[in-house]
Image (cartoon, one colour):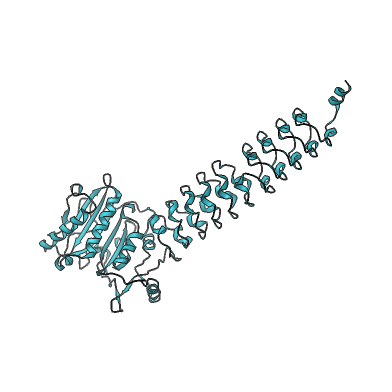
Length: 499
């Protein structure tokens, strides 16, 4: 018929102004150019499903197409969606080759993940299939690359954080989504180099300075979670807030007396088999381990908020900063926390660092709670708590005639929490000094050593020749350890020294 001949010979441009064509009119026509549909407002989305050669611009002015029309079409260019405001969020689901510009002018996408984020580049979502739509909803400043390498973040992780830069999460794969949710002031680099923080560690801390975390690899989450008042400090010059305290009469007293100058020749090595009869070799020098561990002395200094030295101006400022809100409960003696890290390239004495001084119950708990637990120190590290002015070395005048009680625990069969609790109980016994003066004079300090195969807790005594005093101290030491370790599981204590 005439109608059949007309339909067979009619060119594409004859359809340009026809408003009533149904979608099937184009389904089998592979040669139509994009402009053929430009003015046809009634075509349904399925009209193009099987037409792979149409130019991307054919949808530019067509506002009624449904989102599914692109689902199977992999060759459309990004501009095809640029002016289409009613597409549903599913339009990207199966289309991997769209260029970044496809989001630029589309404000009404139901996929809320991009709704308010104008600066994301197309590549930001390309490789991340598991992120939920809401994760970017309120974050205006994130750059496109921040998600590219992080596949495990949950949607809410960035929802309320406006100032994080793209790199802040790029290298940290283990943070849970809530870790940054309530922290508005952290800059991007603050988390970038810290792989061990759990999500809750930063959640409630609004005032942390980025440099504090950036160089501190081993801080425990409790230290950051509960410390709201940290100020900016350099890892190389930690702030000393308690080298001095006030006596009850208002005058100041020094907690660390001038240490005797010891030469390198004073220290010999101690073999793994035990201490020599002359006590040659310091406690911390046994079992040297690899010095490449991430923990260093400055980390421990910052964790405790202390340093071994400060200027007069710093002392004055520090006293003002730590002025107690209520009267402190003073101890009978002043004590010093020391940290040692094995390093074969350094003189042993240079590896012993006085970290913090304390002379009250409150200061003791502040240090214990904020410092890394012993069980989390790498092998080759020691903590020592000794009376102020008495360094943890056998050559010191207070130690040279003494001995030590030792407890060794196999790392393979000992829970880390038991070691930490045993250390704390032993410290409480020593600094509490709830015993006779004779016993009290015997106690110089305590040491906990972390080694590759075992933990070792030691109590150093002052006078090895005073056998009754030595054994009285040993009984107190064992009694304190039994508060952490069941008596039937507690190994025998070993006494080393002349007594």
